[in-house]
Each structure stands twice: as C-alpha cells, then as structure tokens.
Length: 339
Image (cartoon, rainbow, N blue to C red; front, side):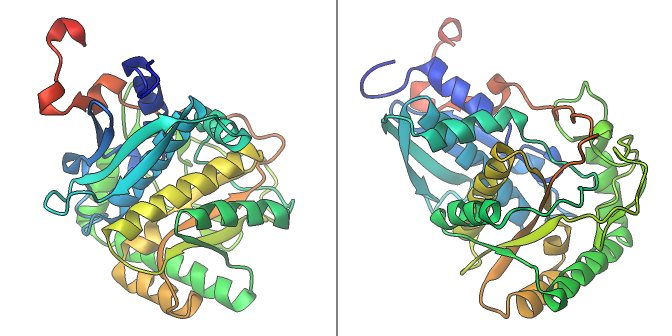
C-alpha cells in the first residue's frame, strides 16, 4: 500500500466484499476494471434477464448495491472513494468510477463492512416482534444520504395497495412462459454453483407471509423455522424510490438498498428485497400512483423484520471468484506472471 493509492491486494479484498452484494436472481451482473488510481464498475450484460428485467432496471440496481459494498469495503480498509456515476455517457456499461483517497475509517464504515459477510436474503416468515422505529429511521437516513427515499408503508390502505400490486405481478409473471423458463434457469442451483439462487435459500412451496406474497421459486428446499404458521408476521414493507427514473437513479437505488440492508444486518434484523412488483410495468405504475401519490418513482421493496429465535442460520449464497469479475484497464494489464 502506498500513501496515494491502495495496493492491489487491498483492492482485491474490497472487490471480494463487493461481490457479496445482493443481485436479482444472484446473477452478479458486474465487472470491475482496475486503473492506476481508480476502480471502475462495469455492467455485465451477458448476465441480463431479458424476460424478468427487459429494461435493465434490476441489473443496474444490483450493480448499485455492488458499488456501495465496494465503497464501504474500501472505507473500512482506510480508503474513502470519490464516486463518479455514469462517467462516460458514450459507454452505458461504464456505471461508475471510484477514486480512493486515504481515510480514517469511521465506526459506521467498520460496522457496515463487517455486516457484508453476514447479510442474507431471508425468504422465511418473520416473528411477531415489531421493528423499533429507531431502527427504521436509521435505515431511512442512510438511504437518504445516497439520494433515495426509503418509505415505510404502514397505513392500512396504502399497504393494501402495495400487497395487491405484489399479488398482481406474481400472477402476470407466472403466466409468461419466457419468465418461468428464465426463473427455472437461474434458481434451484446446487451449492457447487458460482451464481444463481441455490435451492437451499428458497422455500419449498409458495407462501404468503401475513399479507405479503413471496416470489415462487421452483425446486426450493428451504423450510420454515417454526411450525406455528398462525403467529403474526410483523415484517415491515418499505418502498425504495427516487425522484427521477433514469440509469443514475437506478444505480443510486441499488446503493441505498445496500446501505439499508447492511444497516438492518448490523442491527440483527432479517431482510429480503422484493423486486417482482417493480419488474412489471403495470404494477410499478400502480405503486407509483396509489402508494407514492406520483411523488417519486419506486424501484424496490424491502421486507424487514426479526427472524424467529428458532431460525437456523442461512447458508451463504455462492459468489463468483474475484479473478472472474476483475480485470485491468487495457493500458495497465500486467503480464501473466504479474497477476
């Protein structure tokens, strides 16, 4: 490590943590290019989901989560980063450039980076314990710093609109053969896979948690942690939104989702991103109109709550090796024996 830039192993360690970001169907649609004084986040369109995500919203939201994970990881290692989003309009796959600078890690930097290996997408039911308002306020504040709104949907009428949109989206997608084929391709994976949703992380049967319908993944083997399914599920639904609807906004939404989910993990809360109702144009428009009163554009829903005390720890989802997602800018590519 020099006084002006992190050494290669420091950057690789940060990228390993960035690669643990949540992504739609665990596609991990990102690449990182190393420059002399910078790290560049690139979209990997080969890993796009044309049936599920025809506009590429989920892909950029996923990449935004990886961008925030990288920023947090570098900060915890002593390097704050100046982030340039969509730095090259002529190259829509060039999503961000980070320029690291020496930095004394804050307690928040260290806590969020420490949460990265422990965060899981928990699709099981949550307990009846309410989420403290202060916990939600901290998540909302940290998402706000990244240019996004994180809005708890607690009023009964608005929540009904939201869960109805979730139900409608599930029905629409299940009637689409292209969607169901794509879902089957990326889910039900074995533990040996490097990407996709493992069978051990998805429920064995379609479920509602309280009023909230969960996405139906085929071939899941995950079981509920409690036998009493009548217990009230106190999971909160929070809509993540931005004022605008463009690639920069989608990227920021992903960064804010990462901040909120890592904060929840640090607070020992369980979390599950719900993208399905935002993948269907009609239900996304319904949420924007009926839940947000057309004041913002929704991009993701976060379901947050307390896991049951009897809940077994969830396994880590697989991730691609660092070497597979990392390369160098062409002018800096080392000789084979230097890698």
